[in-house]
Length: 357
Image 1 (cartoon, rainbow, N blue to C red):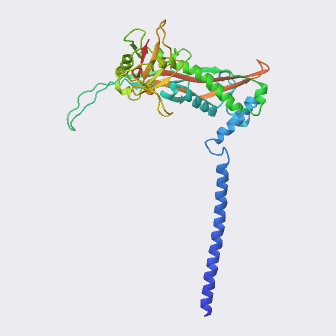
Image 2: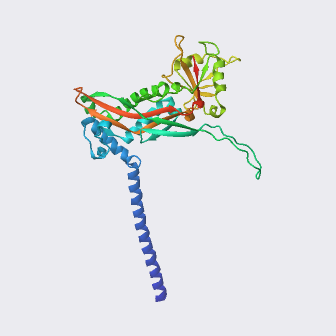
Image 3: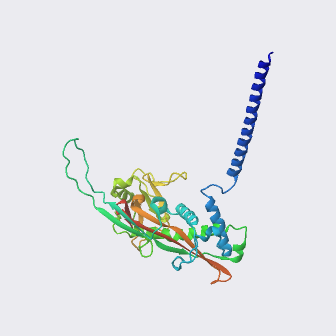
């Protein structure tokens, strides 16, 4: 074999060896990167979405236990007298609203928005305008102009004041963050749930039963609900709203409705067999609310509401919850004074009707 051939083979072997070394080095580096990524992905609370939330939870828990305002929460501390001098927690507020949505029928069905102001203005059409067919080059007929309606919804302050012993607060086995979350969600939920149904709009949301423009349907026979009354509610609601309509009533009223049968002898109420399909009346979903009035022969009550509540009712949340720690006024107990701001009102009365008993 000639020297030239030997040199050529040696160069090829050397080149292949260098490429193999480079490949092994790159493979090792890539393997280390993948390993680091797996460690990071398996580490709790590292994503961009919840990293701030985790830091806030930890700092907020320290504030609840010791009254300390750490760096993570210092930018959210308010000493303004109008704000109560407490912590304004955006993530905490979002979690409370999420909890409220699980228990409030109106929060499930109505339109909900969040604002940073104390009031929100809505402008909407009355829906009365003309349309039709026309040839491409034909002259267009004059059409009516819809009227614009204006509605302003103010947010109102609701408060809750859970109290705890210092021993409970100091107990490390108790998740003080979730303890506070559950109690505030429960109290706020009870207050706003009642207001969304029965509120008069004075320092509280306006309820669906307090809107004078909502159509009130009388019973066909006094103090007795029959199948025809339910059908009357359905037929009186415009088809534009009927496709997304729901019933809301007290569970005591529903227990009576469950006994009603149609002309063929079948029960008009159909139970729910899973979590995704609600119980229905004539195919329309039924939701229960303890804040709806019950049937009473001694008083005239609006016992059933039917409507497209997404189009008919608007809930406005102020994007913060203020929490103030008070260890002084009720020793040895620690009080937590919390406030939340929410508003609500009927924005389209035609989307809702109610049955008067």
